[in-house]
Length: 147
Image 1 (cartoon, rainbow, N blue to C red):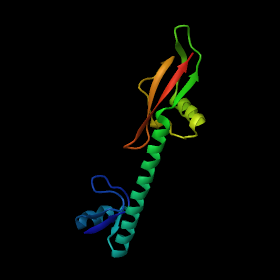
Image 2 (image 1 turned 180 degrees about the horizontal axis):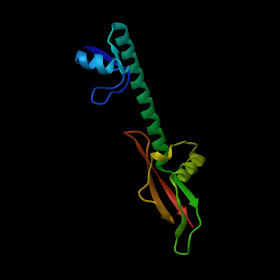
Image 3 (image 1 turned 90 degrees about the vertical axis):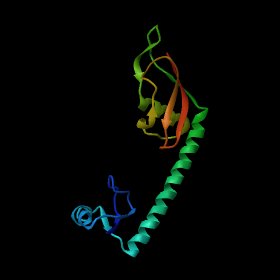
Image 4 (image 1 turned 60 degrees about the vertical axis):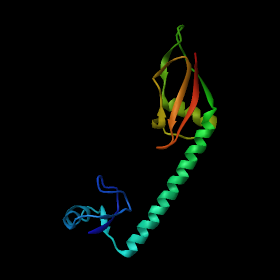
């Protein structure tokens, strides 16, 4: 039976993909749960249009990620924290703090989960921070922690 997926289904396919499955699987699982619809010519055209639009959107996101990575490449952000005489910070520099500093410096708003810290920042020094902007694009910048 030929169907168009209306949502991502694990081990079956992705949204707007045209698939061929056994009639029982379609009738008992995919169709009742609203995960798929019977592939009519009209729905097939709509699915193809949605696929093209999704590809265009992904390309746009990838381009924006590359631009952000370029902006971050030579960036150096400094943060002042209270520390002991030996240079150990009283409180670690958090991911949300780094994101706030980054937003103040560059007006780029990121999610803290995008940061890939090499370690917990508990000492004064210079750190290379990696940001996962998309599946294929990562950016780097330097964070200087001063006591």
